[in-house]
Amino acid sequence: MPREDRIACHVIDIADAALDPRDAIAFVSDDAFGGIDVFIGRVRTRSQGRQCVGIHYDMFDPLALAVFRRAAEASIEAHDPQARCYIAHAKGKLAVGDLAVVVAFASAHRDAAFRGCRQAIEAVKHQAPIWKQEHFSDGGAAWSDGTPLVAADAATGREGA
Amino acid sequence: MNITLQLFGRFRDFADAPELHLELPGVTTTAEFRAAFEAWARAHWPDAAIALLQASAIATDTTLLHPRTPLPADGRLALLPPVSGG
Image (cartoon, rainbow over all chains, first blue to last red; front, top):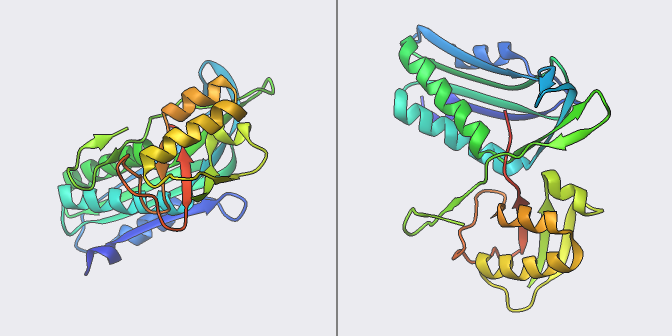
């Protein structure tokens, strides 16, 4: 099966639907695979020492989907060329307990599944154009500081500001 | 060049709309756009926005733009502050 058919990437507006890990597991499942690793990111109740009531996720959808796809391709390339990978991230106003991100990676064996999933979620966290604004029980709100994005030079591959 | 700049994250707090429409004569590369836009921002936004701008990337719908990269013909760009997904 072509690699592009073994990758699924989604941005889901929480106003339309919630993320469902069963969708991720169903997509990556294959009788040839004995290992599926699933990462679920969930809105937690405390952040920066403050009581959190929710997170607003802002997202640049088209580039986020392109980054998800490149992350999935890189994970498959690095850990198992036959693997399957699913990446979905929510946007909008999420409450404590809502799911923010689901990544699943399936391979013949568990080691590649764990490593592929880890590589994919780290790329989503550090490279995808997504921003979170935490809302606190005292009524305050704060954008997270985050990780700067740096473009590579198409000619040299070197990064530039 | 006519530029449409999409704003995200904390930058949304500095503007009334999710996009800025700018006329920046003589701007053809990403580095030239960054310099021209920083001058615009110093005239319209607070100091906190300038610091954030210096830590931000410029992108199209499909890729981040290196300083030497020519701007897209449609002038449609996105200003991306440091990211915090997951």
